[in-house]
Length: 172
Image (cartoon, rainbow, N blue to C red; front, side, top):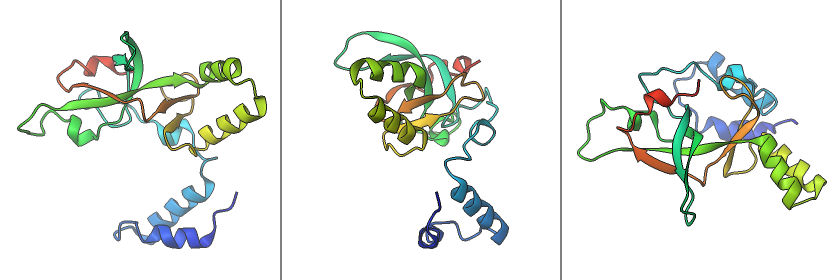
């Protein structure tokens, strides 16, 4: 898949002006290779247990999907900006951390096979999911502490008080 040159010209309009020519070329090279260049070394970092970063995976967070009344514990990805999670950032109001459940792609495909039963349609959907082409889904390839290909629905976000003991919840 080749990215049209005019797209790169448009992207340049939105880039920080302080990027060096080398940094800009490295960015464009990564964009040219996207999404085939997604791997765990580029996507996942080592976690700092002192700070909850946007994108961190946390285990055993409470999840509810209204109107269902059941509450369950799920592994989740933080979607709140890192600066908003920082307890040293002073505010006049209580802060909440927003997160969304991490879902096993294998289990999701199994459910689709049971409910949809259209293998071609499912294969296209999974391909689009892995290429980050579905706006409300973010694909998480196996790597780091993610033991299998997974994803999050960005439209299933819940929140809890930032004082909830999140530091102990980092994915092991």
